Image 1 (cartoon, rainbow, N blue to C red):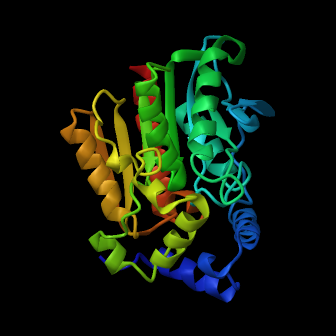
Image 2: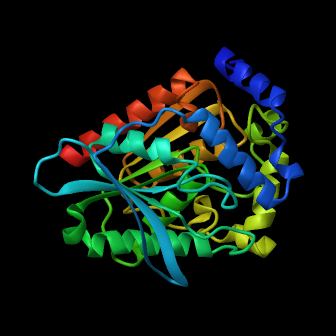
Length: 314
């Protein structure tokens, strides 16, 4: 299928606004560009019951988190969703994905804990998964204080964040806890082989991510080429994917990461994990975050939220 007209229009407007390809920028420039884009895109913020910024202990110092609590909830303990933002493990922040976190909080009727994990190149792999796993453990250990039901904790993320959610689920299984109930993986980075058909078809990009951009992210995230073979960087390379929580994998058709997302969903299913895969035709990488201007982004967020509610209420 061709690019959706809303995607075509968004790409046109981005070019007219002077948005530059990530691989032509320094990490600092790429971060500033992403923050500016998100401010323009997400001007209307979904209201939630409460938001708290705090720092929690991590493996190498404090880790900032933002905790979203939904409105109109009872006095009972709430389910929780760990959210890890996208950005190639190099860019992105609590602010760049604030609206997504708000929407999942309200739609999923859950507490959302968004994690400002360390990023490359200043803090290369495996700093990011270590921070995200530590944050997930902290939430479960401190569930009473947070008003959270520790038996209903899920992990989620988009792109690099989807990668981190998948890796945290593996880490939690191997560490015998915390026990997670669900994983929401939105166009996850699952491998660094760059050899799928979607990498060839969409190498020049359909929107915000190109093959050159992904290689730029890899080179700033991984300290050594061989790190790309580590399952903590590339969960598709994990030798054992069994005994993981149920998963929803969302992919965008017109995305270099499309095929590895499909492969990861298939690998989970082959290992006996309950998996639902939802593909969005004509969509580019990043469409989930562009819900304010792309209808299928809003639809995908609503679909993910519905699945979260069904898991949390089971």
